[in-house]
Length: 258
Picture 1 (cartoon, rainbow, N blue to C red):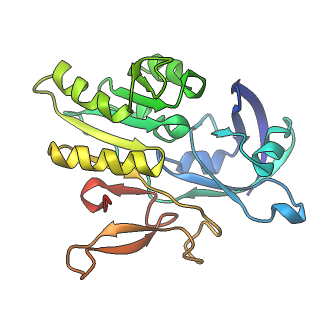
Picture 2: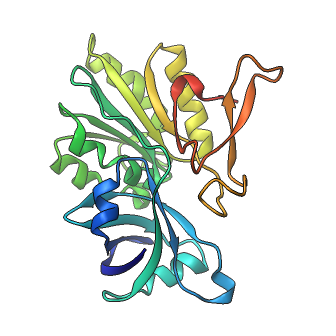
């Protein structure tokens, strides 16, 4: 659909939040799904860009993005009243947290955008474990806190919160809340997700991870975004699945942690 831009604001540094007027799409969207965006019609910008849906309410689709190349640089230049062509919502999203569990979002950088809608669906206050290289890449923490989530931060350089990996916060959380039942939702860089999968499995914890890859078509036709998914019945122990339509969210038990 052709969606008109309501706002396009800078969050901090190279991070921006854009809102599209898309009532029908917003009504169908859930946490962990994405929209495939054609930013403009220029010949050197043919392929769409996949962006996680940060929020979907009041008839609007919200996306958080970081300016990293020509496509997002052009998206940053878009003004209210301009439009983009959207396909969405696409993909398998996160499940709704059960009433008896504490939902824990474990995110790297702006992976926190993809898990934010869980704050609307959680039956009890949850926790955000957010990691990044430095404080400059820590975003959306106030948004989570306003929704009742406890926020814990880890940075590689120690400029904010715990100095170290975000996965190191998991054992701290378990020690602080003994006997509680958790369900983990992960989104972030691939190495972080693989480390997260191993830790959760070692501790017999359950969850879902958003594992994506570079996308071309975004609708399952080109098989350009495949990821390895566990398949114990096969000789290799894994098979390829398309992250755009079979995922991007996969159950922890199905994640092939290399």
